[in-house]
Image (cartoon, rainbow, N blue to C red):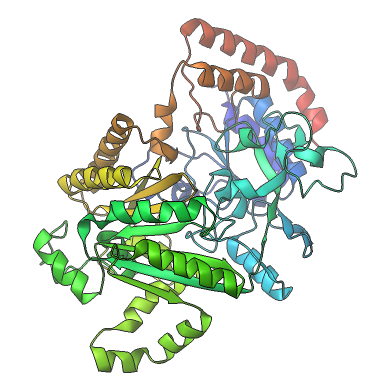
Length: 563
């Protein structure tokens, strides 16, 4: 019986990495192939290289043997596929051992990291250095990779919230095993390698974002100098129809720079999921939450139809003026607008019990949600938002949360729409109708992520341990994608189950396939990830012949290239 390409590659990978870093235990492989929704792809082996050189050697072996490889940084891409590869039978390359902070400059405000460096690791590093610089944190786990989130074009909460817009100097291992650096980093002794992202000549950083054209093994992140003064704002709307007016009111403040960071707006379902788990007692176990129960829940938790938050950064005078302009813009459009700084937050937490006795409102419960959000606006990572993945579970989130292992159902759908109230109102209404029809609470957040666009994150939360829920959730997700396509709101980020829908025959796809065929003649790096694989039968036959010729030509060199 002929030996499979993956088995041939495993022998060589073991020589390069050592047997302890070539994982073959079935239980571990099964865990790695588990996501927060139904998947059927199998993982034959997990590779754990410890250096860029070992990543290169692994990819050379993959090319020669024709063995597909799928790299992940921390693998905590929950809601989009976790660490499950984009095609069946891929070796999973876990880059978690590449966890060094390679360079740091307080004066020029940058840090250079490897893919295994997490949000918490960088936060702790800056604290140990007593740095006056802030990182930008996403709402994902503190154990999530900085590079992983950046390459997926994730976003955060501070003025540096556009993660991919605030990096430079990528070190990339190509599918062939060759290594390159982008921008000025490719020029020996360039003193601006970490400071100026474009370099000279064509800029290629973006081609490695959301792609399968290379593995980023190093990146420089720009950090934010801590402002003289920071103040967060929070608002609620008790009028369901207020969303459009609020969005239109804050747009000029984003466009003219009064508000420099993202503003987050969540509907009542989204906020409730952040405050606790599904109200089984109040609903008598019925799902989704009946309409008749929602007014009582909003009153009980002091939640409006819409709740928003954002940050003001600058000198005290700048923040004061921004606060005045924001109050003026939202006057008559929101039910409550509050401004909170470090001092007020301290007093609110200290006197929460007394406040409850005087007013009957459990301020402490609200602070459980407010404090982590407030911290995110200062670059402080938190695992609090991750608890919402347990929304429909019958048990409380464990101390060490792992939505994959714990059977949490979570699918995210992330469209982008114009920064206009009519679009926000249209999208949320139609999404809500579809999700309620499938039996899921429409948990919707709108992030006013740039001066001109809104990134919407739609959460489908369920319990994977209930029969039929996986199927229903995937059907709901597919229906949402259909709606978004019809309405003209494409997603900025795709999950594992959606990437196949990128197929097409236009110039964009032809360009990507051309580059892919040149950089990855054997098609072994993350096949199917963010790239159309469809081609004509003639093209496919030609590519297969080219790949076979490449493998036959390079296989004799394999033993000479591996120590």
